[in-house]
Length: 121
Image (cartoon, rainbow, N blue to C red; front, side, top):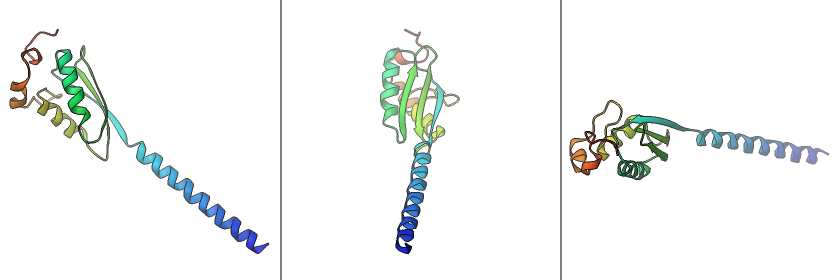
């Protein structure tokens, strides 16, 4: 009977630690956030450029630009990056990011249709 109780105790302890481990992993996986960034994008080429370049940024799991509102929505892992780094990445692609102006050299390399003074098309 004593051996049975010991086995039962070991089994219960193992279940406890396994369930605790599962909770920690679930919490780590939930450490994603989504931000929106107002950009100076004007066309479908801008959309393609921003989405493809931002997808390669460390920690980014999802990215989408709404051309009509010029809002870039980025979902990212908080352990890998932060909003400031993401905004800086947008500026280095050549677009404004909220209050941050586009990197001058990157902006100059954009096609004429992607310049912010160009009409939306």
